Length: 413
Image 1 (tube, helix red, strand yellow):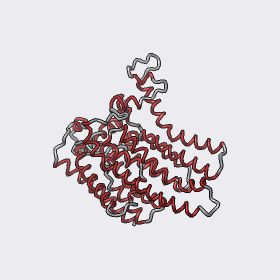
Image 2 (cartoon, one colour):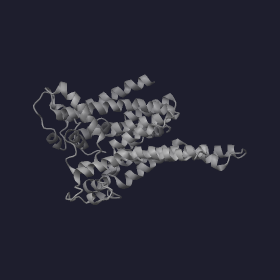
Image 3 (cartoon, helix red, strand yellow):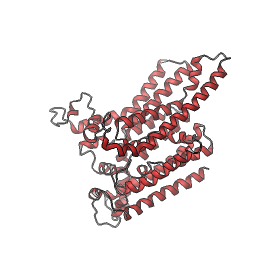
Image 4 (spheres, one colour):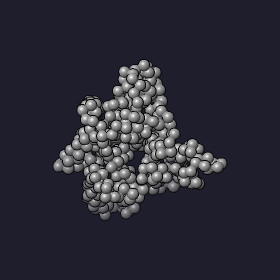
């Protein structure tokens, strides 16, 4: 089954790449500004930027990999991904400098990196599913859904989703292997995207649950939990400090940005609000109805997952409760049986869905949840027909449509 998954994951990667190339050459782009971001040097392979991989936010990340944070609004993007791309591009450019410009080499590097990670992620998700308790067939289905996910295009081009998803899945794999080092992966994920902060929830949940189950409330356990949580979120605050030093003069504060007055030196909230319009209910406008409709299938899917799991847990609740009625088990022990680590995945998914609905550009919720919540694909395998068929159709349609639309610089999720 694993060998079959390897073949199909590779076929999907190649097929989507070819679809991007075909789309780019057959359909005129809606926006031609990408061409301005990647001026041709006349070298043989400079046309690599014309295959739909350098659109939308890819422009920002490729710019960061080449020039760093020379504009304030770039503070919305975290540094680990462009730093990795820059390092790999410098190596790749050595044998290719006579064939393409460094700018084109950065785009090529992001293509190779993200597609490689996307492929690896699908294999790791298969292993995670097995450790999660799914059968080999269900694990294969979960991994296959990941390769065809509705945000596939964003895990293939110069975005952070593939790298972020890699660290999240790897961290959960390490945790399922009963190692406490998974917090290091979550820390790296926070260096890729700010929403890596949410992964600290798994650390807190895991430690608190283990302490309650064992009845071991030693101070060393609390210290361990605090240290791991702090390391997990540390990249966020390091980057805020670094960005403050770049844009705020501590002596005279002549920068002009109001966030420089912030005692903590936190720029992220200001930049998201000022440049991207992110905030509570800011996107709830009549003109954004099409974007809400675009994201609606993902919201419906999450609601269906929650209803399905609630019904399953209610049945388990009654069965377990009945089995405990004539035993010495207390209600407290019973609740601990229900509140296992799997529940954390559902709570995390529900919380991020609410955040996406209420505060974000709602159309990005699809890729936001795909990258943040790998358990999403495991949950989808629990559906029976016809719901499982509907989910598959949704994934395939958005996977193909997203590739075509994004490659021609039209708005997408």
